[in-house]
Image (cartoon, rainbow, N blue to C red):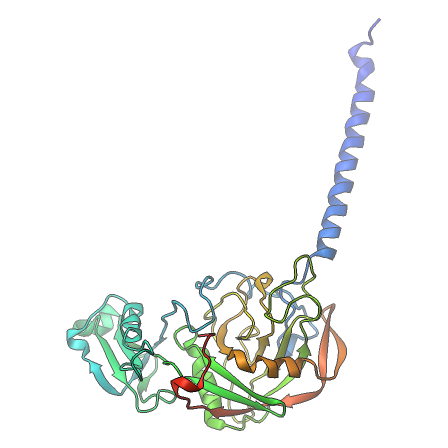
Length: 353
């Protein structure tokens, strides 16, 4: 004779309870293992938070910052300027008869005159009026200009009352600065079309030349996780070591103001980027797609100089722990000096542009 329904209930509920307990246990184990085994997505820290979290502390590193797919080499499709800035200089295209709907279009018009194929750039700076209310009849005007010295452009006015947006364009062999170290000189191609505020600060440092206080303090090799070209080895970890050299660009003679988020793209071998909003920065020795467009990239080390960055990464270090992540700190910091570089087209291997 079959059992009555009331006799079946205890056995049925007991089975369901055991099933639920099994599912909860599985979920707890999965979450724990995922946390332990997941590679660190951002093993960098600014100077004031080295003992704090090395991950996404406040969410400021998350997201793509608008230009996530643009590559760091040569600016790609970037075309940004600095609002409330009017650059002076000799006009090569008069804005009264040359108008656009956006500053990006004005920038691209200047870039079209700076291809690098026909000698020096005919246009290396642009000025656009994009505020309808403030500009009035000047709305849409795009002035294309030529600077006497594009590294130190002639500024007419700056400030919140200025209705113009301006930007500069570095042609082939231009916009390259040198970071001198005791182990060689790192030549860096700056990207003003992508990160104009960052580049403006770098040019301020260039005017100081000696940059007292600027130095590298952290050095980590590619280890066994990335090959010599910066490619990640299949199924390998993502560190430590994390394939980078890190330092600070806070000069004693210059007041540092936090850099706004600008060109956040995939970190490639040779990328020069801020940690947070600076003045801490790093040079990557490998491709770091796992960092998900987390950092403002403002330059790229010329390929032939990466051997110097690798040499610094092999200097004696001591172990340290920043927020539960093992890092390698240089036993002796590496001071930096700034120098401007003027090179002809034939002097450079600009394959990274």
